[in-house]
Amino acid sequence: MEGLQRWNAERVFLLYAAEHEKEAVAFLDTLPEEQRNRVTPLVGQLTGIDLRLSGAEIQRVQHSVTHIFHAASDAATPEKELLSSVIALNQLLRLAREMTVLQRFSVFSTAFVSGNR
Image 1 (cartoon, rainbow, N blue to C red):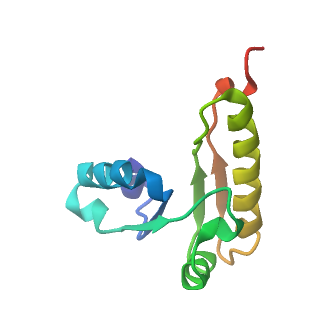
Image 2 (image 1 turned 180 degrees about the horizontal axis):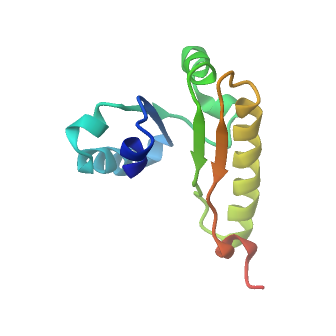
């Protein structure tokens, strides 16, 4: 979240799955109050259509997000992780195409998703 300071971001949307709420809240609790106040938590699912966000949430995201930083993975095995990662990236790209002010889409990954090569 140091990017909030470096890019002077006014608002950050933090998308997390409902089963990771405890971790999301713990992460937000580590932020200084000024940064925490600029974060809008969204409960969704990367592999779901429209990230399983509500219509109002989709509208807000489509018309206000300028940067996407995608660094998510939620599968336990390499095979499931690869499939999950591809589906999640596809869903996020579909939504990104409809974002009216998007400037940058950054994907962070690891070598581990490719298995034992």
